[in-house]
Length: 553
Image (cartoon, rainbow, N blue to C red; front, side, top):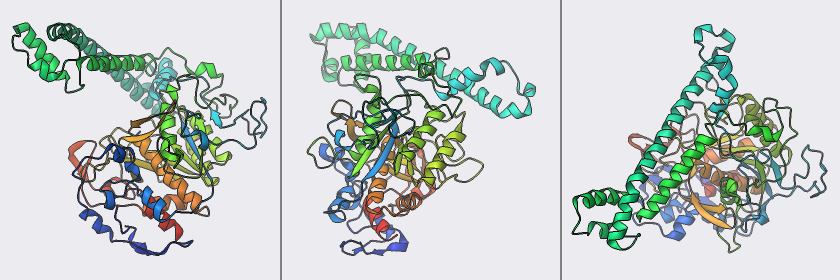
């Protein structure tokens, strides 16, 4: 859940803005002019692709957030107030070469003494807290619902259910149907891929023998002149696989990986027999039972693969800038607080609620939440935590999700609004994902959207960032768009610390760039609309604009 002009575009109410602190007055261009920018025809270079979030639409014809321009024109020689950004995620490789210098250290805790020095309830929470302990895999939430209520409701009809239980029964029925559907689809996928491998392996062996090598190309395969009827069938089948990989061995590896992944989901996500939570020793139904977890914030895996997602998110926000290593994060002068609460599966509402409270209580001013689910047994715990964070003046930046659907009318968790009412807080910003292609493909084909449910859009396709063990990788999703926007939020809070979380949210929404161009939604060319109709602000976040607007608040 998962996503600009050389003379700046800002909102109509601030067409001429004077920068403070010695910045020269800046004159913007009317919003309508954004649509006169030509589409980028040439492909991006590798360097451009790895840093496209930093680009400026007018000068680069790439719909980034004008980060480089903001640093060179607005922030040169300036150092703001240090800001703590909490990343609630799968864990972070805190020893990564590009992150180790930007990881938060609890100043009130003495490392390794086995004591709760700061009396916050968490022993030796040096860099944050791990609410999952040694858990990596978990059920999905609707599987937990089935496990919890199956004995009570299985085989029952709605007519036999008391009125006060009908909503729970309906949730159980929906969850049961979804679980059955997912199990059937997963098993069918495993069967189909195994059948493909069963046909490909002998065909590939025959062509390997005929051509004298296993890594033959498609042209070499199609160039065989003396093929028998059986070999022609094998060639026809194998040639289609080159649409997905450069060689047949590579494609077979992909198929085996897909089978392994699907089987892994069957064994964990959909497993109604397994008890993953038991090792923690807490009661997940009791929000007051908080004595669990540990301080191992990168998780239990020595290879740190479980920390892949969180490490990538952290790098987008704050990978150390200008150190000549890897890549630059959006924000400077930021410390990343690590809060591990998101497993391979669906997160528990209890863990998320406590994670938000932990971050708020320990000094975070921005929280990034790049996760989500469509079922929740205790949404009120998370709503209460969001509101609590609001009382601590904390802005939560949240990923919209990657199903390519309209969230208006569909409840997703976490969120700051109920379907029957308005927003429960003013400190929660939901982010959809942008593509690097300006024009009709501007919104990522996977990004969720919604006039009332998604506030803004940020870069979320092919995002280059840190991954464990000093490596870097492209990942994409609204999970990547959210930290890009969180990085901008951190910069506003750093240089304009008197602005409240509510004001920072409003700046991010009001100062962005809009376009009248119709964009494709959900990857369906027949489903198009404009940004103002698929998000609350109708805009793409822009750091250059945001800092100027913040200076005038």
